[in-house]
Amino acid sequence: MTRTMAQTPLEDASKERLRLWLRLLKTTRGIEAQLRENFRTEFDTTLPRFDVMAALSRFEDGLKMSQISGVLRVSNGNVTGIVDRLAEDGLLVRVPVPGDRRAHRVRMTRKGREEFARQAAAHEAWIAEMLGQFSAQEARTLTTEFSLPEDLHDT
Amino acid sequence: MTRTMAQTPLEDASKERLRLWLRLLKTTRGIEAQLRENFRTEFDTTLPRFDVMAALSRFEDGLKMSQISGVLRVSNGNVTGIVDRLAEDGLLVRVPVPGDRRAHRVRMTRKGREEFARQAAAHEAWIAEMLGQFSAQEARTLTTEFSLPEDLHDT
DNA sequence: TTAAAATATTTTATGCTTGAAGTTTATTGA
DNA sequence: TCAATAAACTTCAAGCATAAAATATTTTAA
Image (cartoon, rainbow over all chains, first blue to last red):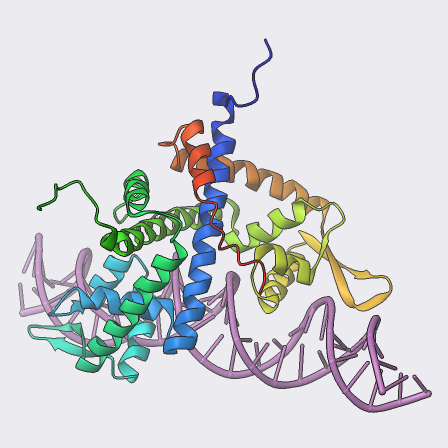
């Protein structure tokens, strides 16, 4: 009734999942730390700023504040501060929405688009290097495997 | 000379790796958000506090401040504040290191160990549920695959 | 011996993040 | 009409995170 070493009893599924989570967390934190460092030294910016620019870059007509927080899944108040600082730097502008004086549409400026283009190219290169151990096929497979249903929508 | 749809040209490896990274980031952020929510509502604590307790729980004799930041790979100054607050709550104590008046050893109190035991059990259950789509074998395989060499040690 | 370098830690300045409360403007329904 | 509710956004308080500067102590080496 002894079991061989390579087997994994069902009872241990919880431990294996915990191990996977800890590995996942360690990996993503490591990559994030390297990205943060690169963004800081190469572009004097931050990951959250890049995230906001990336979201805006996909919408020619800009996004309302609440749409940005929706896309990025961060809180409203958070976006306010980041947009404030990006606007100070002239990378984007708040445009009043005609017909609704509560809302503002946030759009990138030309300067913002140009700066983002450079940052996005560097970002892709950094990631490609850090994930260089994965072939295109492996990457594609793993991307599919990590489709967690835990996209808890909003709530 | 046309290629079939399912093929992935080597040229696209960079794009596939970027896609994998974005998926990884989205997944871990989603799980982290759920954990933060659970820790807040169930234990009135935070993920960083749990991380510090988890690190200390593995060392009966405690850790020095710089060892905590080393294990968790966060900055020294960061640990100061978290340990301050955990100490205020009586979950751990700073003990002077004999022979080196600069250093302090941080140890969990009995209260801290008891509280951590409850939190760790809940944490494992939450993760097991969120990663329920992976069998023990799948989890084990993925954990191995994500052994990135980018454990940049310290630098 | 003692000045310089290294080590351990805290402090400071800045920014990200959340949840909750507050403000202004729009919409709804009696 | 007009009070109540909802929506869009900002402000606030607290905590997390970093890098850089400051403090105190220990070690090294001239």
